[in-house]
Image (cartoon, rainbow, N blue to C red):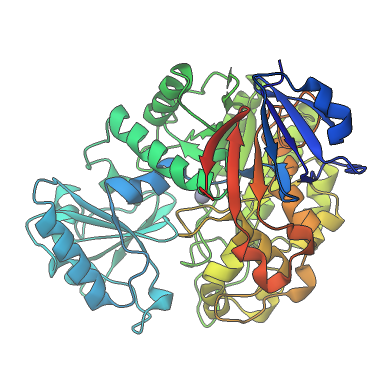
Length: 528
Ligand SMILES: [Zn+2]
């Protein structure tokens, strides 16, 4: 039976060859799109129990799909962890941690995340000496916005057993000061030395975080998401929610194979598939982040000899990827710098001979060269990119990258010109506001929040950006069941107050989601 019929809607969808053809109505039967047509054509489906909504000419489109968002971490910053993303100076940071410590005396560890020193007056990283001002008796673990760098106070270093004699693990650094002692700053795999000592969250804690993030996703019209780094405990939390029927969005979970701070790989997970959850791709990290200068570059960062960090041993990475592909799993690899991208493409190219159709994705693809894009196209390698970084982190890019790198930064137009499957995403909580319309706006304007424009010739159209946030994001996750308005698709869609295709560029981010539907049910409404 048709349980919902929406008419008088501007229907948008972004699959190849889509045309609304004057249709204004959509009928939902259970969790599925039953029919699309004109109201005249569909009104015979209306029965006494059918809910009928006049959309008043508003836009109805598939729900957004954020193909790279750390769901539990977003939720963690709303629940168990101190959010320091708005902080403007070291003093403010120390004060905030002090206050938090006072308000939460029961905590065994103080964990905080989100500082970005490029946005501070001082422009320099905090160290253990700064954090010691907040507390010397409680361990403090502070993560930079990029999640590839962290700062510890003296107590945390002591509890992790890190001193001037500790050797940095492969793929990471324990930074030493002029006095030969650790400064408290760690990067990449060295973070694991400390995170191993922090009491793990319980499954119930993780579920609280997931629900907290989901609430915000619904407000932005996000009905599907990929969590791009899940460990065995988080997989368990997600699966329990899935089995209990309470996940509430389409989840693609990418299990990590090589955890930080350990030489042992996790066991290769079994593929998993239900209506709401997929495990079909695993995750590796080839380098770090651009905004903190840990992405692996062939040349070097601006006014510096630093080249970032290559985190993966190529042979081990190839061998583990092969094992995953033999079990039917795809591989997604974080790669931002040109050196990291080149290494990943090399490995994928090799694996493509034996596993041509298995999912091969590059996460971020910050600084690819033209030849990289050509071999991605030739070897069926897809990518999930974050144009939202241009607006939110563009200031860091300008500070840390020479012009020739800036001009190839997140080159989405060049990627599309090569016919590479490209999804867009937020990588939240790396960015605070993960509204897809912000990423879409930045994909078109290429503008930083401060108004500088980065590589304007890499601008893409609104339709291309919407496609990358809907159907392409589903496709890159191996999904064909949702992501477009078509008969038989799962009914995950949103109602917008304005048509993005005809909205002025400077008003795109003000477009409001009015209602969000998942699985044929309204899960969120702006209450107008
Ligand atoms: Zn990420």
